[in-house]
Amino acid sequence: MIFEPRTYRNSFSKERFQSFVITYKDSDLWIGIDHDSYQEEMAKEALKKLTSLREELEAYVADDSFFKKSLKPCETKEGAPEMAKRMADAAKKAGVGPMAAVAGMFSELIGKMLLENFSIDELVVENGGDVFLKLQNPLIMSIFAGESPLSGMVGLEILAEQTPVGICTSAGTVGPSMSFGKADAVMIACKETALADAFATGFGNLIKKPTDVEKVLKRTERFDEIISAVLICEDQIGIRGEFEMKLLS
Image (cartoon, rainbow, N blue to C red; front, side):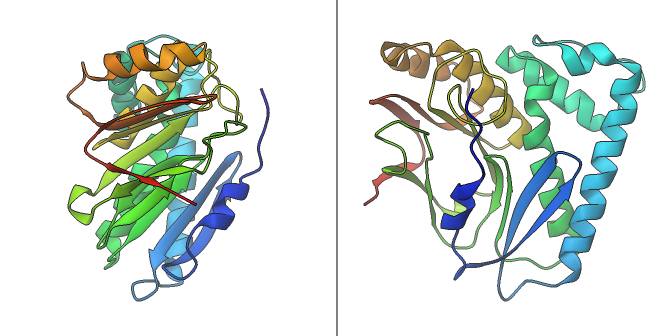
């Protein structure tokens, strides 16, 4: 597996968003706020929330190591925190281990905390390719797909009325996350960001070669929760759902 530094963040719009990065242990989140809404204390509150989430989850998995290690769906123990239960539910639908939903879960919970505590018109919380979005105007999200010739060539137009929404990307050829597939990018959009994260991992596991793209895309139709899906493997791409595809120069 090739590790890619998060250079894709360099393409995020500085004109549209005032941004900051929060890090705690191995969590690294980019947060963008529209300039009119931005307040300096947002970074402090976001970091506080990230730290709290990490510590709460780590305390739980210290008593439930199977939850942390399992690559298949599993139940939570009695007294599990709500986020662990939601991760387990998402994993069960996607057929993966619950930790496959952790990045999306953190993105959404931090994003919702900011929306609840500050007056924000537009918000992007990005956690290693797993994004929670709330928009006031359309946004075109390009798709980074490693060495694929299609990387950066296509994007999805997200409309304001389609948000808040979670859009998560998994890959078998790019990034540090575990995948059993060979997809260059599997992007899934759902109302629940943890579920989008789990589905991205689950469908990514199924793509071993370019000819798998079509049949795996067909499988995404079984789930009403999936708003949109983009699958890329080498020079093959499959797209379905509510978001309009845009060709990028």
